[in-house]
Each structure stands twice: as structure tokens, then as C-alpha cells.
Length: 249
Image 1: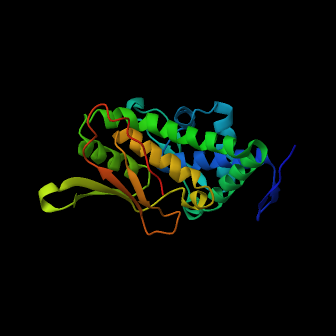
Image 2 (image 1 turned 30 degrees about the vertical axis):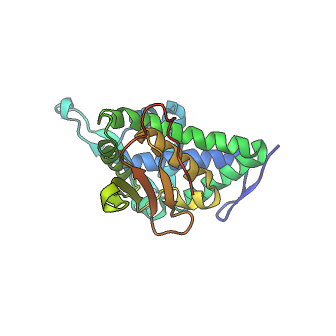
Image 3 (image 1 turned 45 degrees about the vertical axis):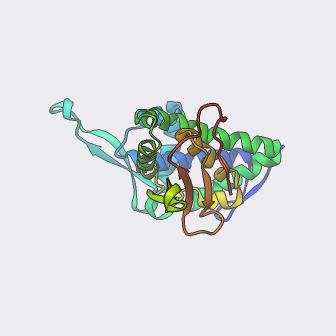
């Protein structure tokens, strides 16, 4: 069965076309983050075959979203400069807008074909991958929640979430405890998360797992707030009281 979705520039998109465009968005974002970057390195970063990388790069270059720059390799001596890809001016103008809409169409198609369970499995898989990428760096900070939070803030900011953390005091003076509020001033997936709150739920669960505390999401950009705000206790329950869990909005 072919599920049709709309692209104002091209008309209806099939599921296969939507998935292809979603992957192309990942390639464009990787060029933005890592450029100047080679096709070979992009394949390693995105776990794509050389043929797939070349197909998407050719399409992005044809649409003037990326361009080739020649970079002299330090170890190459007087050899020929190497071809590297960077985002073109038109790509900067379009990045994150049309492609998010296409990705949202692909998610709609996935839900139409596989139901809510398939959509949740896909979203959970994306954040499980993100958690695996973050975990070694977070765990290297030790067991202290505040230290882990500092590392997580840097990792989230590097991925475009404009993260910060503020220490707050909770309760009366004699029984005051320290906690933190994790703020994310930007969400690269906000347009998608508005339609698919599963992204916010999975992100909350990931943060709780990395910090190993019971967190509470106080507000989200996707729900109309100015920031994503998360309450983070800086101490853990005593041993034997049960595993911490994330509490969403």
C-alpha cells in the first residue's frame, strides 16, 4: 500500500519518498554540524552506505543546499586539495523548515501503517541512540547528580538545545534541599513534537535515565511554553526505595 502525503513544492509524497527526504534532512544537518566534511566521513557518522551518501549529497548539491569546497589536507604535503561539503547560503535559509515538515509527514505515514505502537517504537529508538551517545561522557562525571547535569547541559547545547541549569532551594529553611532546573531554550524538533508529544515523553525518560534520578518536566516548548523546564533533584532516594522514574507533563 502507498500512503500519500503532501509537499507543497512537489505534490503528494509516498511513504518511501517521505522517508528518503527525512534521511536527506539528516545528511544536511550532519553537513552543517561537521562541515567541511567528506562523503566518507558522513557515511560513518550517519551509518549510511557510500551509494546512499552520494545519492543524497548529489541531490542536496543539485538543489543548492550544499556546495563543495576544496580543503588542503595537512598530511598531504603538496598533494591535491580534498573535496569537502559545506552548507550553501540557500541551505542555511531552508535548514530546519521544509525538512521538518517532510519528517512529520513520514511519521504520520509510519503511524498510519503500523499504528501508535510503531510510532512510539521509532521515537524510543531515536532517543535510545541519543542516550547511548551521551552515556559514556555523562557517566565519566561520576555519581554526583550536579556533575552529571553539567555534562548533560553541554551535550544538549552542542546538539542545538540551548541548555542551561540553575540551582534552586526548595522547602523551609530548616529542611531546605537543593535541586536544579534544567532549561532548554530551543528544540530542533519543536515543530514535530507539537504534533507528536511522544518525542517529549521519550526525551524526559532519557534525561531521567542519564541522571539516574526522578525528574519532573514542568513545561515544554511544544506545549506552548517559552522554554522546556525540568525539575531535577540533586540527591537520590536511599538504597532499596526503588528505581527512579521520569514524570512527564
